[in-house]
Image 1 (cartoon, rainbow, N blue to C red):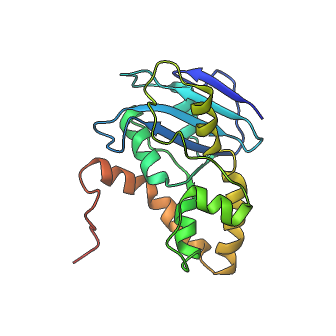
Image 2: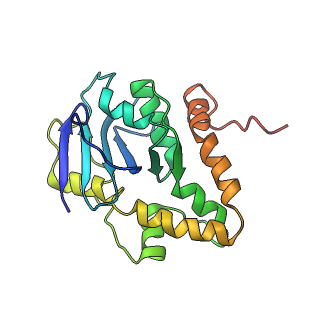
Length: 203
């Protein structure tokens, strides 16, 4: 298990496989105000590849090629936020996608606890630390503790997806989940364009 840190983009020729777990770190939770600082990715092999984004950076050709590649499934936990952050920063629509938080809400209806830390504990018996969650991701040099924290958000998503795939099939909700995943980039675009809390399907 290793962390590989890059600046501004993924290196040429790096292939992360057909399913890539992705998470983003930003300066805050408002994508219009708070810039994207770090993108962490894993192909499910135990390694994490992290791209540190410079202030004002608006392009990352290799990264964006992967985000928009129709043959690569992008795997998120609460993808709504990350997809919006990536769209706001680079102007690309990330697709196709899978979101473990949506999967959890569709099959774990017996609880309202759908955070990543809880899911990893309950479903995989894995305990991760959230100590670095609220730290300065815009710092020019990130600490090893920050990188390890960022990596922990993607290293186990493939295992989590496998567990949720079984539950979605068991509860006959695979098609419903897929429809939600397909809509997720549009949901993120609505957030950016001014409908973050308004239900456009309501009366």
